[in-house]
Amino acid sequence: MSPEMPEQIGEYRVVRQLGRGGMAEVFEAVAVGAGGFERTVCLKRTLSFLSSDLEFREMFVKEAQIAGKLCHSNLVQVFDCVEHESDLAIVMELVDGVDLKHLLEQLGRDTLPAELAVHIVSQVLQGLAYAHEKKIVHRDISPHNILISRHGEVKITDFGIAKVMQTHASRTGKLKGKLAYMSPEQARALAVDHRTDLYSTGLVFYELLKGRRFFEETNHLRLVLSVTNAERPTLTGVDPGLAAVVERLLEPNADARFHSADEALDALPPISRTAASTARELARFVRRHSGEASGAEEAITPSGSPSPPSQSQGVEPTMRVERAHKPTLAMWAASEPTPAPEQREEPPLPSPEPSPVEPTPARHPRTVRVNAGETPGGTPVVDTMETPTLVSPASPRPFRKPWVLALLIIAGFLGFLLVGLGIGMAARWAF
Image (cartoon, rainbow, N blue to C red):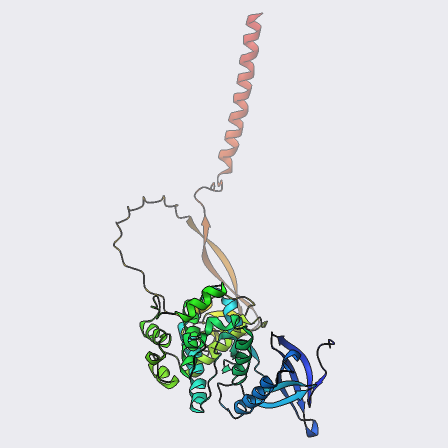
């Protein structure tokens, strides 16, 4: 354990450090109870330079108490708020997975399948609808604060704490990293309500569908100007129903946006798969893109349902995809229907010239003796049968008349003698 990482924070035993930012550090810790009871939690501790800020400490404790009252399947639950060596820490549910920012970084300029994007945003909107009913505004909806577990759960983290961090950052001028996901009114430091969360959700939705951020400026001043003077976008290349939802979420005028997260949920077009099957597919997607190695194969059917019986049961095998560290989106594209190519009339092709036909080998019967068993007296019974023997026409036939061969040999020998005698007589006459 490194010297910067404490062994114990309050009653929680620190296991390892999960991350560190400009204002806080995150640990995996274990709460130990009676009888060997243990619970693994996530512990977020503010950095030491914030300890002397009394206003920050007071707001931190207050917001942690409010967030601790929230209990929803799409929100990371807050369990406790502790103080350790004058530093404050909040104890939260530990989500076994990755944040959406990491997932988008793995994808690069690729996009999620539309059904997965709709599923993620619908889960975020459900969590926001619950929190907004409690009069709690997040103020920092961004891919970094949306967690996706390896089981396909979608959870919003840092409720309440985000407000404290942003309030302190606004006083110190350190909002640069969050501007790209702010609403225009929030960037102008105006009063905000739940509709600022809807605008930020629209920015996340846009990024999921288009594979890039809505505000892409890297220069701080240009980014501030782009956010504060944002205009309603026009989405192309996506489903018109989804485009209409994103465009309304990104209305610069808060009054023109959806009035609530529930209203935005109702406007989402229905997806073809059930929530359970989409969550399973999202879980597979997270496992592949979070670097989880596994030697197991996983069958994916075009419908996204569990794989059917294997080929040994008389069913055609489904497409099988091995889990890998860096899979491509072609795996998912395989589950989408492929549009049929245009049918064009092609000119008739010239008929090919007939190829020479090989002559069929002749068949010559041959007799085969087969042992057919024994008679009751023990005498073997032999049957005869004729089977065809393939003989190639190019191979010579066997010579069946030996006397003709003998005559040919004798004639050749006599011819050789006559030629020799003729040569001898011609030589005698010459001399």
